[in-house]
Length: 203
Image (cartoon, rainbow, N blue to C red; front, side):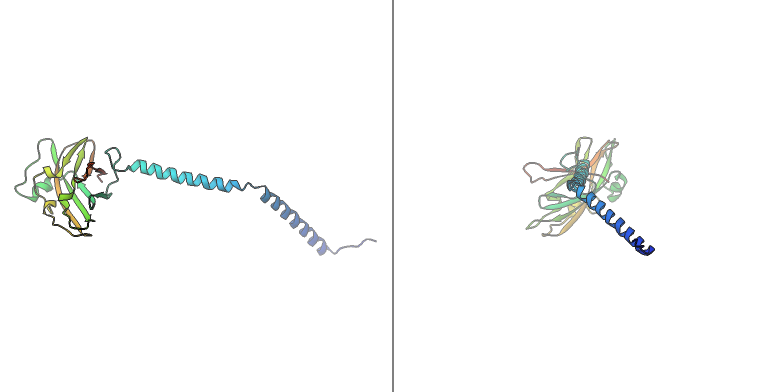
């Protein structure tokens, strides 16, 4: 005796069978995956991030030599100060206009103008121009701000003694050669036994 299933029952049975086959195939694929593959992907991503960080560090440098200067605007730690500075390389007109007694630079030279900003981190008191030497490095030669005898607006030599946590700022001129291939701002720790120097790009 044959039993005829209604059409709707046949379709339900067919759908249930297809679902069971699909579920079995999915389970087989999941079981065959290598759990180490996710770990490998994560390791590759971490390696890529580390490589980018190393490349950025190599590109900017640590500031301890002219060949690896810090980016423009970087702050450095000198004695008890956190310092940063900006430089106007072609500042001859501004320097001469600051005081009627200021003198012209020598032939082949120009005046650069450094604006220095610092925060005193010591425990007693500090004076900005006494604690750090700074200037412009041009093509292998150091040009110290103290060698420029002209006075400028907000002259660093006029900065007062400050207490811990206080800020101080001032400007100084530097006589440098015109047309040098490379100019860098430099800071030197005059109280350091090893003569620590930092070089910063000029923006």
